[in-house]
Structure formats: structure tokens, C-alpha cells
Amino acid sequence: MTDRPTRTDDGDAADADAARVPIVALDASALMAPVEANVRLFEELDRLLETHELVVPTSVLDELSGLRSGSGEAATAASVGADLAERARAVETDESYADDALVELAATGRVDYVVTNDGALRNRLLGTDAPVIGLRGRNTLAITEP
Image (cartoon, rainbow, N blue to C red):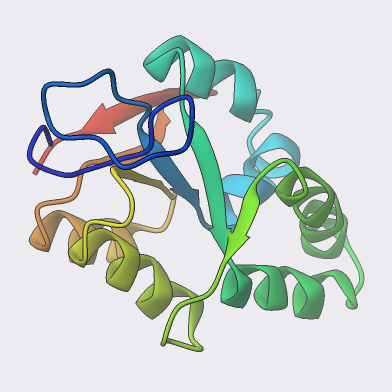
């Protein structure tokens, strides 16, 4: 995705030839994966990308908030996911539905990757030519290019 401007270490927009820090959006399934799939999310992202900036749409935060109010494993995973989301910068989009917000971020070039374990969302993102990071094997993440 070398044609997309992203942030450099100083936060300014950079052209394709400058040092790039990929922007990575997280969805609820990715943030819940440490509990649901025993994935070491941040270590895996560091392994794949070394440096990156994490973002999470506010609609994903809302989704996690709704899920954590329930009971059982999903509520526990959502609670952990909401805590993990604090490591990312919250971003606004025009979309109120989390999946649509992630597709908007990818389609408009505001992010370089989206992390998800949702198959339908993965297919939508690949349709916008956005690389997707998702679970491969038991607890390893991998990049799928469009």
C-alpha cells in the first residue's frame, strides 16, 4: 500500500518515499481475541509490522461497551477488549455501525491495515483493496493481501 500517505514518527503526512509508520485499525473481534483465541495481539502485531500506529473507531468502542454489559465469556472478552483498546487512538467516522466504519477507514486510505477475525468483514475489506490481518492457525496473526 505504498501509495497511501501515513504518519511518520513525528505525526506529519508523508509521501510514499518517506519512512512510513503503518496505521492499523482494530475491530472488536481482534480486541477480544486474547480471551477468545489466546492471541497475544500486540506481540503478534509487533512481529508482523515492527512499528505501527493503532486506531480504533468509536463505533467499535461502543460495540465493546454493549457486549461487556452481558454475562459469560463474550462479556469477559469484550471487557478485556475495551481495556486493550485504550492502547489505540480513538477515531471518528461517518458510520455508526462498526464494520461500516472499518470499511470506510480502509476505503478512504485512513488506515493501511485492519485487524479482524470476522470473515464477512474480511471479504468486504479485501474488496476495497485493503490488506487484512487475521488469525492463522491456533494463535498466530497473518496478513492477507487483496
